[in-house]
Length: 369
Ligand SMILES: NC(=O)c1ccc[n+]([C@@H]2O[C@H](COP(=O)([O-])OP(=O)(O)OC[C@H]3O[C@@H](n4cnc5c(N)ncnc54)[C@H](O)[C@@H]3O)[C@@H](O)[C@H]2O)c1
Ligand SMILES: [Zn+2]
Ligand SMILES: [Zn+2]
Image 1 (cartoon, rainbow, N blue to C red):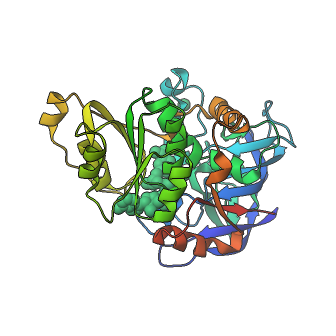
Image 2: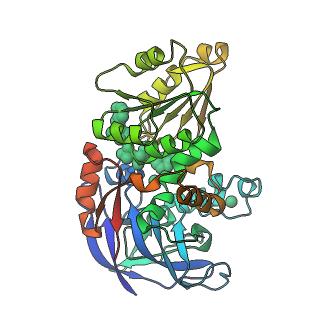
């Protein structure tokens, strides 16, 4: 079939909305008619050349839609099912999957992270050339053929924009705060970055009844949104030394948990520096290829500090997507507040421009008619 898709060819060229060819789903795959997609900084990293990828690529890895057809052997999904797409279509059989850590699936790490389906191929073609779907999703398009294990069925009447964001920002951020390393009640918590992922960390951290929830950004409108979502204190990093400001707010102690949600080496170092004795810094943001950090290992041992990472919120998408949506339904996670501007597939160059300049509070959602 023919469909419209947004193609990335090189960091030097704008994205283009084109007609491409989409083949039928093969065994173990499904075709999804997309309803909405979200704009994540991980797409931006490819767009500006901070992460390499073999072009052309249909970017977008936050997506929700409806299953339209299923390939041979797919028994747990049927046409008409509402799904959220997962960018770690876990195999279910590797050592990480069988020990309950599908976010580390070693099969997905090879195929999906190289923008391929599990059999190492792609179903999208343009003028005789293979086109890759970003992270085995490729949601900036009218349809996507994805591995069946990457299409997670959801229940209920959920806004497509909210559902799409559960596919990355929400699960990544909320999951870091409730799965990877939850704060204890009364802890002082720092969240570095109030973008789509950072605000999701804020919502997840707020569920843990922290004593202080301190959020750092460089945009006042994002800090204002963070306060509405549960931040007790906000710091504008353009005006303050963040580590000093955190120490002042915590009576010199520092924070028990710090989440980095920007993807900047320096912010990771600041999270670590802002820790109280026994504290944990969780690296959620993903830096441009090649960036390194420098920390003082003496402080690490003497103060018993932990530096850890979080991939996809340490989530098990087949359980956690619905779990998060249920918490939204109960009013515990105000995910709709995360939805920012709503645009169309033709507007993605402007959307990424706004992300680069930091001028778009909330997550930009692409509605796909
Ligand atoms: N670990 C994972 O599984 C995972 C998943 C998705 C995204 N990510 C990563 O998370 C990071 C954030 O993604 P996002 O989509 O929320 O991005 P975003 O662009 O929406 O948000 C980034 C935020 O950081 C703020 N910021 C930028 N520079 C700053 C500075 N010097 N000091 C303070 N704040 C600053 C921006 O104003 C913005 O609010 C990216 O690195 C992305 O690749 C990780
Ligand atoms: Zn993402
Ligand atoms: Zn696996």
